[in-house]
Length: 86
Image (cartoon, rainbow, N blue to C red):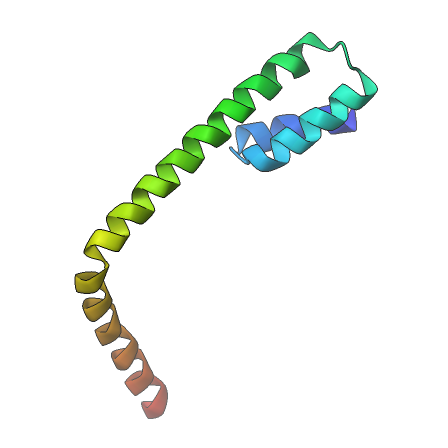
């Protein structure tokens, strides 16, 4: 029962890696659990979608990374000045 509640918490917080592990644990103890079987399939689909989205975001960052890199240096210089004053 504890695994089931942890699984639901992970699912609700969209921690799909943890949810998958917990769902697999449930299936070890209850191999015929229809809900766990269905959720495992859905979780794997969500992980694939998440992975595809991350790849897409990374490729977008790579193409525009040079202009963002220059602007991100300025705030760090300001924060180091503040530390010296304090």
